[in-house]
Length: 379
Ligand code: HEC
Ligand code: HEC
Image 1 (cartoon, rainbow, N blue to C red):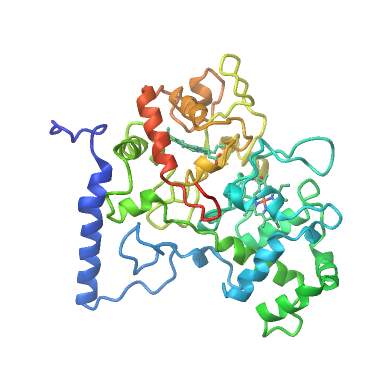
Image 2 (cartoon, protein in one colour; image 1 turned 135 degrees about the vertical axis):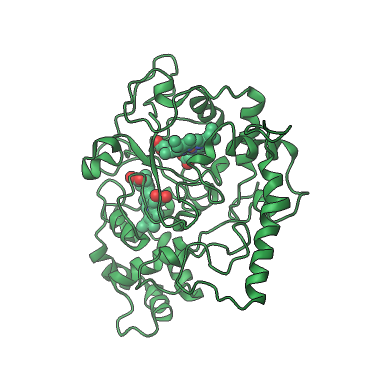
C-alpha cells in the first residue's frame, strides 16, 4: 500500500522536482564533469550539457532549424523584426505578420479566427502564439510544415492570410529606402543580400528568438520557492496528476513536444466542438491532420499546443471556440467531445469525467497563469 501522501493524486510532484529531482541531476552533471566524461557532442533540443530541464537556456532552438538557417546576429534579428511588421510582404493587402501575431498579445490577435482576405469570411483557424513556437519540430495545427523558414513562404503566399507573392517581395522592398542597408548589414557576405531566401531566413530567425522560458513557475522549479503561491503549486500537481494534462502537454515546455529528446511533436484528438453550447454540442468540422495524408485515426487530430502564456492567448483551441480557461477546464472535466456525448471514434483524450472540483479547476488555471512570460506584455 502507498504511504500517506504518496498515492497518485496526493503525490507532491512540485516538491519532488525542486527538492530531489533537480539536485540529483545537478550532482550527476557535476560527477560527469569531475570524471571527465564528455557530453554528447551531437546537437540536441535539450542541450547535452544543461544542468537539468529547468535551467535558463536548457533548450536550443537551433536544433529545430534547417542547415542553412541564418545565425541570430543582432543585424539579422533587427531585419527579421522589421520584416515581421512589414505590410509590403502581403503586396497590396496591407497585412504583416504582426497584424495577426500582435506582440503585446503574446503574438496572437484575441480573435476567434482572423478575417480572410478572400471572401467575407473568417480564416479556418485561431491564431496561435509564436512564443516558443521555435521549440517544436512541426508548425501549424496540422503539423504540415517543419521549418519556420518554409512556414514564412506558406503564410505569405496563402491567399486567405497575406495574399502576397514572396517572389515579388525583393523588388518591393528595394523600393523602400531602408531595406537595402538592413539586408547588407545582416547578410554581409552575400553578393546579393536582398533575396527571397534571405527574407525567409531573417523572419524565421526572428521567430526563433521568441523563446521565453522564464516564467514565475520556471523560477520556482529552479529553486526560488518564494515566487509562486500554494494554489499554483496545487494546480501544477493536479495538471501533472489527477487532471492528466501533463500526459499530452509535456513538461517543461507544456506542449506536445515529447521528452526526453524533444525531437517529435504529438497530435491528439479531443473532439473539440464547433460552438461553446454544452447542451447541444456539435463536433467541429475541421478534420485536422487527416487533411494531409487521409489517415483515418488522424481525423480531427491537432498538434498539442503549449499552455505557456495561455493566460494571454484567448480564445482557445484550433477554432477559438472557448473564450475563457474556465470553459477549457469544463471541456476537459467532462471528458472532451466524447464525454459530452459526441460521436468521436478516434478520440485519444480519455472520455471519463475528471471529477475536478471548482477549487481544483481554479488551481489549474492559477498554475497556467504562473506560466506567463511575455516580455512585451505588462501584467
Ligand atoms: C491573417 C492572419 C495571419 C497572418 C498575417 C500571419 N499569420 Fe501566422 N498564423 C495564423 C494562423 C490562423 C495560424 C494557424 C494556422 C494553422 O494551424 O493551420 C498561424 C500559424 C503560424 C505559425 C505556426 C505556429 C505553431 O505553433 O504551429 C507560425 C510560426 C506563424 N504563423 C508565423 C507567421 C509569420 C512569420 C507571419 C508573417 C510572414 C504570419 N504568421 C502571418 C494567422 C496569421
Ligand atoms: C489527450 C491529450 C491532451 C490532454 C490530456 C490535455 N490536452 Fe490540452 N490540448 C491538447 C490538444 C491536442 C489541444 C489543441 C486542440 C485543438 O486546438 O483543437 C489542446 C489545447 C489546450 C489548450 C488551448 C491552448 C490554445 O492556445 O488554444 C489549453 C489551455 C489546454 N489544452 C489545457 C489543458 C489542460 C488544463 C488539461 C488537463 C485538464 C489538458 N489540456 C489536457 C491535448 C491534450
